[in-house]
Image (cartoon, rainbow, N blue to C red):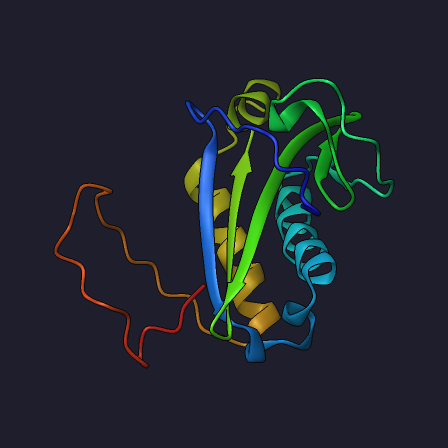
Length: 157
């Protein structure tokens, strides 16, 4: 798999998912380009808070470790040479699913006052700008099972 396929041990990481029709943006058709595009948007959001994140520009051989954050791959987000964000993608029936994970404790510990809420809004605005969509925040509990299927009016990053 392009994204390495390492084990992600979610705990305090910030996780997110993006579901989009592949037709929404030409770059979403190819895995490597959509991975780069989404992570470049995440990187720009971090730069807004003066966090000098970069995209990994090399394809490293997969390390011996099985943990995702141990082995950066091309277009992962890195800070000081350490992977801080990665993701995985799947395409099916004309849609892209991108699931990402950000090593939040690593970011928060080195940046006092860095807010998850402000970052989330900045990242969402960046994705909205990228796809020419308005940002609409909808919060719900992960345990909420009463959510219906999205409709044509629920286009938001």
